[in-house]
Length: 341
Image (cartoon, rainbow, N blue to C red; front, side, top):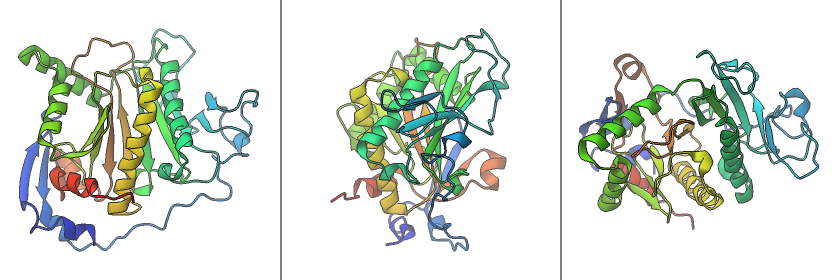
């Protein structure tokens, strides 16, 4: 059944508007837009070229690795690796001048690529379980290394899957950008939760988590340590968030057991998305606390999944609001109902 039929106006309210309490943007839920004609269709399936620069054996055409998961004794910048972290050849920031520098300009930082597998594979969800765990371990390890750099304040890890999500290469990979400042989205989350604590005496993340568990209408999956749900003010159709059930500020301090548990939920969340919407583009983003900040009650690291079912267009860019054809309650039910049998 086409996705548009499952979210037709017969099944959900025709128009709903919600405002994000942290960022202030309004989201207009207009279910009728799921039925509109569409002249542009998905691009051809992702495929890695024969001269794939991220494939094993092509290490000489990439930048030298800053971290790699490989067998002991395996030489750096050669075959034999499982995951490689390398500087981006076309960075968004000027390279940080010197290791251990106390300060740097806002245009300086770290921009790296996390190559998620040695073979020519385009999808994280198709990797073997241990390979996916290695990817998350490499992310955690690289964040831990960067956290001791005095000039760096924060790092964001993100994955652009597919052309619609901004990817320029098909090989399964993520990116890391570490900055000398705390990005606005993260700072607004921190400030809102700090103010909430001062005003109410309550932990905002815990309140949010308990509400989702109590209402259950936006839950997708629950495990002993993590919750997957569709945010109440979702900007994107089938948007999901993965939140720890206990206070976890810094992703790089996560235990190996939590990393393994996260791998299972994250993989199933992405596979649910693929089952419902097909091979669409998506962005996967980690929000973690600034490196040198530890007194942040109410903030927890979390992963956000932004499916690119519909594009960001003029109103979103010019007015600061969003239009979404799928209510999060509807999205959560669709995602929950996916069978892996």
